[in-house]
Length: 323
Ligand code: UT7
Image 1 (tube, rainbow, N blue to C red):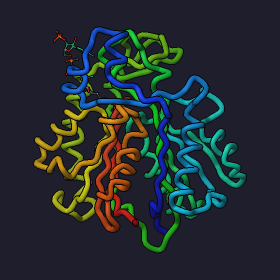
Image 2: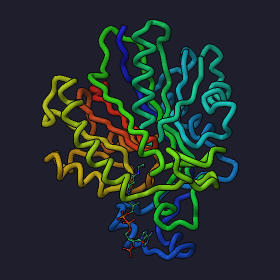
Image 3: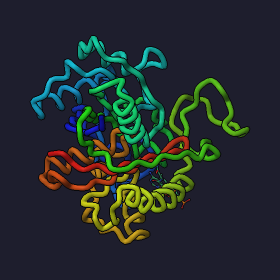
């Protein structure tokens, strides 16, 4: 059996936070945030709203919008770096909240590349013949781990969740995949746990997000622009055959730099950064769902999705949208 992505759903928390909010807590301006990141607004989860709640709402949105049942989902993968707790997993909480009594459940940790990793793993489970209907989430409550004294990072992050259904089919629609890791960059983007070092280097152990923005920016542009032709080639496509390029929405300037470097037309990219900020693993499904709702993405379109982030890690897939 092959793996087919058949449906998408998303959810974002209600509270919209604009750039003016940050002018009142750190030395920044709407002008700096818009020009350096492309972000206008982001969503903040309520105090009582956690990643499992966002996932559950995204799954219900998927079921409702696509008129499908989730009752026979047999595996749940949640890509997140901001779980409700370290244990139990978010996936198990989602399994319970959705009443999916026949589903296995795991979380995976691949930061902003998590959604792509999740789809790749779902494809493997289906190809192995052990599972037939997998729900894959990219979901974060980053604002619960944000350092609101660090102006270079606090303005970036937002909360949200997206999910896709990956099902067994005679003919799949995941045309290619890439994945990689560069662990020596781990110190450039982290949330600490108990250990006080990464690669022998001291880190700040406040359990908040810390980022060397310039280093990650440079790595992201070099890495993703190098992987785009690799992905296209694995899918037996030219880059010009790609209808929509959906890189992780970390910064509008990264998307522009990728297009400049590769010659890919910026008007054929989809983003979620402008309205939702950087939502890590949720950013790609949020951008894709926006593109579908706006009528841009059509049945049969070739989509190139590439996530990149803390690890440092990246993962990309080429999808033929089912519609
Ligand atoms: O999602 C996972 C992957 N993450 C990424 O891909 C993030 C990649 N990095 C970035 O998006 C950007 O590096 C940032 C948005 C984080 C920062 O933008 P930047 O253009 O790289 O800024 P910078 O850190 O080089 O700082 C430029 C200047 C500095 O001032 P000086 O030293 O030139 O006087 C900063 O202090 O901008 C200053 N600055 C700010 N000014 C106003 C930094 N943050 C702010 C701020 N408001 N919020």
